[in-house]
Length: 166
Image (tube, rainbow, N blue to C red):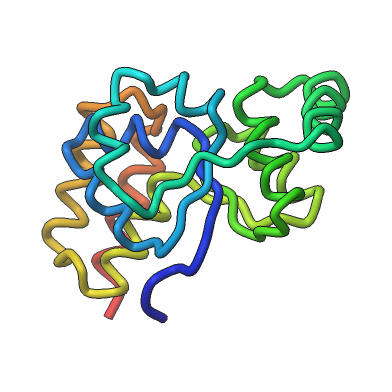
């Protein structure tokens, strides 16, 4: 598998990984594109984020901005998520990372592959970047110490699955 070549990030994964002191897990990606609007949503992390040279702020073209308006009006998703999905379309990038379930549904319906913070943690485990023990600890930290909504049942299921992974 190895590094993921390119992806578009919404604010959620930046914020949630930072809340559990694991922002460095984004090194899993060779290139991360995001928008100025998304970076503004996580302005309190700007100093941390700009340390990573593989994160690039992309400019949306006028047609992409029109698509943002369409997404917001048609699907009632937030502006930040809409800029991320529109950036995926503009740059023809298949992977979109967001923790917003509605935005993920919209992205899927438009033909993109959408994932969240938990997927990043699980992928770093599968790539042997972190251990099984660390992975379980990070899922627990997400559950207890982050603003990411994660039900106890889902947390327990994920941990059980990690335990079953060989």
